[in-house]
View 1 (cartoon, rainbow, N blue to C red):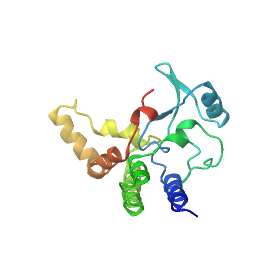
View 2: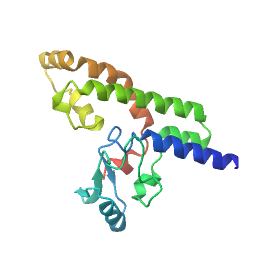
View 3: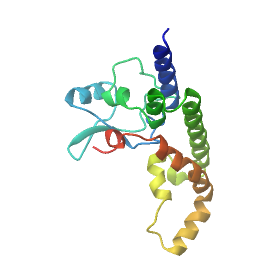
Length: 180
């Protein structure tokens, strides 16, 4: 096996095991390229929605169960074309496999901590991190409301102090996923 093939295999394995782009952690939706892509998404049981004249499917994707369960099958183009920042930098030789893996593993661990902490807050039931994050970061609250907000959600805010900047670092090509 060539060095390039080994790198592609490692990138693929890291990608398929992570899922931050599929499980609603990074993005709220994934955009579809065209009608053929929409039909494929529909055939996979993905709920196709229209937003600002473009079609997408909401995340989390129900085909992600600790890893992508349809990775080897035909799937929407965004699923095969999106590379997060660490994987892009790994492909370019800017990051080593060890550094990219460590960054992604740290994000996945923090996401798991955040998800476990969310179980104490019924108001966040069945919401992804990308849906919860704006609710936690509410700059429009009064000072008194901010204090109450910090008291109530302190544990989530503390984990978020580490997690959210890391997620921002991992994101790339946000328009391709989230913004139609």
